[in-house]
Length: 301
Ligand SMILES: NC(=O)c1ccc[n+]([C@@H]2O[C@H](COP(=O)([O-])OP(=O)(O)OC[C@H]3O[C@@H](n4cnc5c(N)ncnc54)[C@H](OP(=O)(O)O)[C@@H]3O)[C@@H](O)[C@H]2O)c1
Image 1 (cartoon, rainbow, N blue to C red):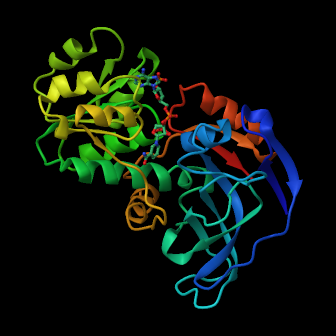
Image 2 (image 1 turned 135 degrees about the horizontal axis):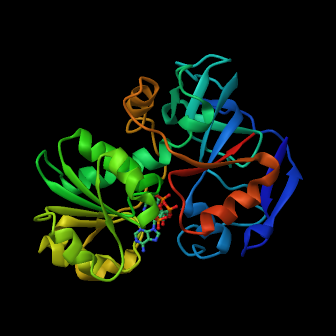
Image 3 (image 1 turned 180 degrees about the horizontal axis):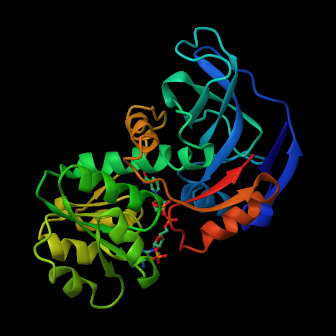
C-alpha cells in the first residue's frame, strides 16, 4: 500500500512516499481502507522532532492517529463491525497510509449522512475537549473562556460547553470572530489587553487553554484560582498550579461516538479548514504549521 513515511525530523519535506506492506487486523481489530485523515498539531511536533523525550519515534515512521474509512477485513473476535461498514476513530497503526488497523473499541460506525472528511474532524478534537471539560468540572451556568477557540479542539470545546449550558468566551483573531459567534461563543481578540476585554463580559469561572501562547498567567488572574484553569498545550504552566492534560495511550470511541451521531443529525458543526489530496500530504503539514487553522486540516485518500 502507499504511505507517507517520516524519514527525517524537521520540516514537512521530511516525509517520503513509500510502498509498504498492508497491516493485518489482529485479535479485536479491523482493517480499514482509509478515506480521510485528520492532521493534528501533535503529529507536526513529532515530525519536527520536538517530542522525542515524550514520544520517541524511530525512523522511518508512518505517523497519524485519526482516520475515517471502510472496513475491509475483521481480525479474530472483532465484534460489532462488518466488512463494508463506514467507520471513524483512532487507529493502532499510522494513518498516513491507504490502510490502517484499529481496535473495535476505538471506532464508531459512520451514518451515511456524514462525509468521511467531516467525520474525521471529530475523534481527537472531541476526546480532547470532553477530557478537558470533565477535568475542569464545568457546570451549567458557568462562564468559561476557551483560549484558541477557532482551532479544532477549541471550536469543539465551544460547542460542547454551550450544549451543557455554559456561557463561552472564545479568543481568536478578528477574521474568526464571526465563526466563533456562529459556534455559540462571544469572540474576543487575543493579544495585549485581552484580560480587560474578557472582563468586560463579566466574571470568569474557568479557562480551557487550548493553544497556550503564554495565556496561562492571564487565565489564573481571570479565575483567581489555578485549579480552574486547564491547559493542553502549555505544560510549563504547571508551575503556576494549573491543571494539564494529555491524551490516553489507548483512546476509545466513548467520548466521540455520541458526537458523530449528533453531527450526522445536524446538531453539531464539523469544521474542515482545508482538504488536501493524499499526494500532497506534506502540504497539509505546512498549513497546520502556520498556526491559524480554522477547524481541522484533512487529507483525503
Ligand atoms: N494535550 C492534549 O491532549 C492535546 C490533544 C490535542 C491537541 N493538543 C494541542 O492543542 C493545541 C490545539 O490544537 P488544535 O488542533 O485545536 O488547533 P491548532 O491548529 O494547533 O490551533 C489553531 C488555532 O490557534 C489559534 N491561535 C493562534 N495563535 C493564537 C493566540 N496567540 N491566542 C489564541 N489563539 C491562537 C488560531 O486562531 P486564529 O487563526 O484566529 O489566530 C487557530 O484557530 C495544539 O498545540 C495541539 O498539539 C493537545
